[in-house]
Image 1 (cartoon, rainbow over the protein chains, first blue to last red):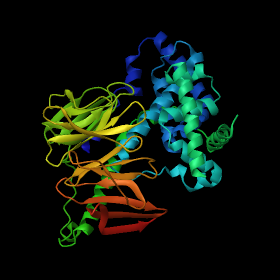
Image 2: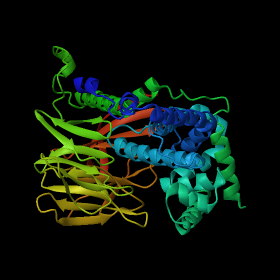
Image 3: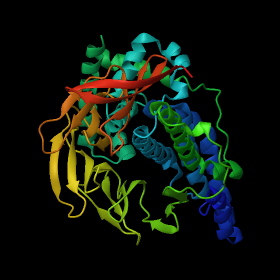
Image 4: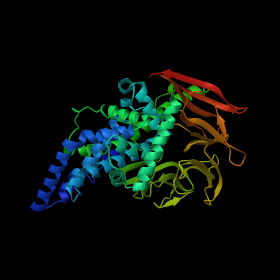
Length: 191
Length: 283
């Protein structure tokens, strides 16, 4: 356990600040961080909602969004700031997928995890009809859930879904179609 | 728009609204962002500690003929390193510690190590996005792949000569594959009854896995080379199972509302016979 104490954030904020030198780069860095902070103000809630819909876990959703913004804050990689929201959505979905996969592995070695924010309170808000939808969505793969969320919550076109998930147009369409069919079947089974 | 689409939109809007318009994030202050990178390590450490405590306390109840560890003198606390293998993640790299050995884990996203086996450590990696590969981390830091691509959760046989793997098939289905540890050759495989299987353990009775809806998993056991897998009915089985290699018995967990139970039992005439049970309610 001692070793955890020695862990340094080698890619963290402190080191990256030291590695940047010169007033021009410092200015660019400050501009980038200001832009990241502005994006944070504008899109934090929307991205947390996106991650909540994919992971069904508020705390994990906030962590995922925080890490996506933190990466952008430390390493502004975007040439066009207009693409920042798309980049962040992709980053949040990738990290959400990673969390779900790790959780799936961990669940086999620990007792099943019931997300604290997905329990009694949110169940009362959702009501029985919507709880059926939530249960049916759980039976889908993560990729299928992502496509449905992007299509039916964010109302993205299939072309935008392609760019966000890095899949082809036909793959996005067929995934949405199959996911909807399976969702219908699951909902009928739950009646 | 059909009924499913309407219900889906309604659910998504309502679920999203659980994050209120007035909610705010913690901000992008440097201290906060640096600190948050540790949460996976802390979470993993907490999970390991929790399961060790639960297992230890449960085993003391399962074995009533022995004096429990709690009855003896309590050993002093120590800050020495754990005696079991463990990994530490530092930024984008990880290191495995096992006694005096330290092995730098190849820099790929997601490496899970579970067992000492085959002269190294059995685990799985994600060499690229969407791909999983089971294998052995050698002491020199190289990773020897085992079994097909898109396989993970390697589970050694009781004699540690073979490994069972969970293999994802492209059609949304899965199978269990058994591979010889030394040669790497496939020895047997069986399809899962439904969807992707979750490998749970391998003991003298056979390989244990579950399939189906994760909220209502179906328990299955299969002895490679001796017939088809068998579905085992366990009321309210929630997917948690431990199968000690040297034993024919298993311990599993059930959940019925707030009532949670740990059961230990064996197969008798194809049915799970509970030998001991410990329950709590909503703790």
